[in-house]
Amino acid sequence: DARVTQTPRDKVTEMGQEVTMRCQPILGHNTVFWYRQTMMQGLELLAYFRNRAPLDDSGMPKDRFSAEMPDATLATLKIQPSEPRDSAVYFCASGLGDYGNTGELFFGEGSRLTVL
Amino acid sequence: RKEVEQDPGPFNVPEGATVAFNCTYSNSASQSFFWYRQDCRKEPKLLMSVYSSGNEDGRFTAQLNRASQYISLLIRDSKLSDSATYLCVVPSTSGTYKYIFGTGTRLKVLA
Image 1: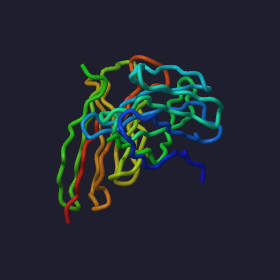
Image 2: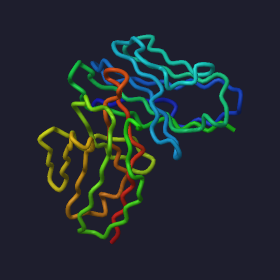
Image 3: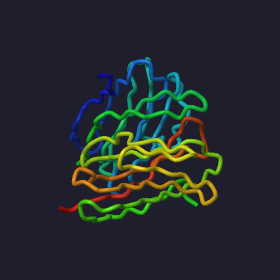
Image 4: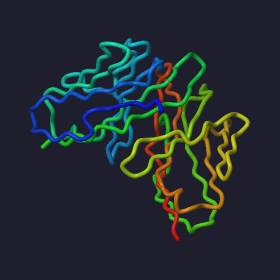
């Protein structure tokens, strides 16, 4: 069963520390999304890629967040330095984003981040 | 107007009831819409797509009203297992392949 894999599942860290979250999209999917979910804001789009190229990261605080796709099997989201307000569940999702075909997004199980 | 808006609920309904949620969107050019379901502490999963002609899957019916720019989800004969948060998804006004999720409507089906 093809699935999106995210690591770590849970992370507790101290304020100021660097956090890196990783995502392996489903093989063959050409769009990858990073979302952040909190009780207050719901699912917020942070960044997304098509064919590994970043298309939009306007939802991401640029001073501390960065998102990359070093290859087709790996997407990373890095926070440096982390702050307590970054505490949330971070989801990666992948899909087939052909023009005119806004198909299903497949989500990973999420990375639950707690910054103390 | 926000790109997508949903009533957060919660909707508390008895088993067997019919319940409907609406979701308004701002991008009049949007062609495709989706309903996702998210169980507590789990990832969102696609429930159904919303076509211009409507879409029905068992007890679930999704419809699109372009004139008023909203999509709806109707659940008939509610089951306890339908308790979840239902998220509507619309294409963004700013970017192809960019999906915007509503904040979700929480449904609780009571025995």
